[in-house]
Image (cartoon, rainbow, N blue to C red; front, side):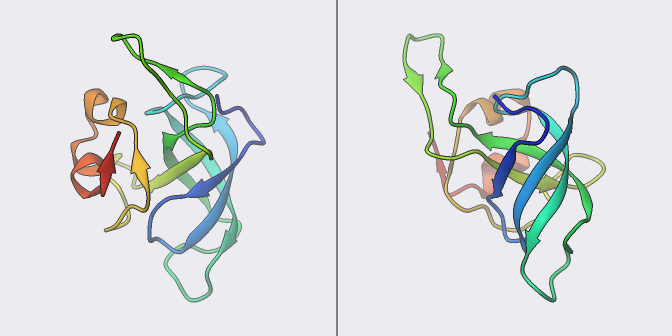
Length: 119
């Protein structure tokens, strides 16, 4: 579960390294597939995303367990997000690491198509 002030790793190649959540859209906590407003805390120099820039991001991995309908539970080692454009498509061309299959069920087809592993 992601709340405000939570630090997240960026799982794409936009140039940002760390994000801090400043607003959760539609509720107080975010889970996999939710959209947040975040500020870039760390970025690679000379890239398209700069430090202290405000961006939209989609949560792709969380440390808190995800309960599935078949009874299985899955959790990841880190909280991670990918940066989105204003029309909720990914800004990056690559995604690093696995993503949860709940992303595909919600309707982010572009994210799931460029992801290397869907768990």
